[in-house]
Image 1 (cartoon, one colour):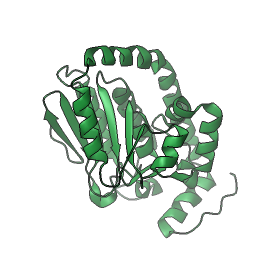
Image 2 (spheres, rainbow, N blue to C red; image 1 turned 120 degrees about the vertical axis):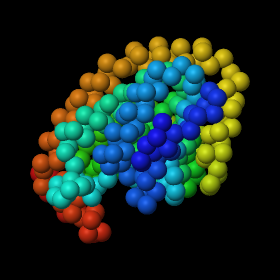
Image 3 (cartoon, one colour; image 1 turned 135 degrees about the horizontal axis):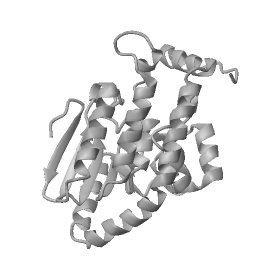
Length: 261
């Protein structure tokens, strides 16, 4: 499979997908969203792969959605309804993959990038990683199933608090909260993920994948409902003055002045 903004490698029963917009901190523009959705949907029918590793090229895992395209002007502006539909396709396909998924996180995993990492079965993050469900900083709500994955990991009350705070966490802090599974030393997340993948390949993976099918399948309806609610809510939030202020402040590199409307 050949793509513009991601790379795909296959080595026997192990596959590796790299988010590959390093000059843009692997921010997810429409092309990357479409390619990830397409790739995951194709992989659902590939019974030869049992372990999938997801990583980022360059200095970070992913800075999240491409905020500059949210300004709504120019040829690179984003169609929010279409984007939310593609995000839902991507997350749904990834969550239901009949293989064990591992996210190897280094640098930043923020916003939608963090949602995608949280959709993985196993998350390894480097000790100095910057992990943030930080949609609140631009007056938006989590998407990509962020609400679902956060509450699955930490419970509803804590998920709400973390989403509202939008704090940036390092690897040890995220692990202490249960948001990630393993902490790697700086520069070793991919190496640790590859070692874990090799260990898994010597495990009874058919049984492990069946357990995933049962547990994730039981939750799929709830994920679908939350994705639909996120799409509706995000469209509403995008029309608020707080969102416009948040984006302008981000572009201008200043603190936002929110008014709750």
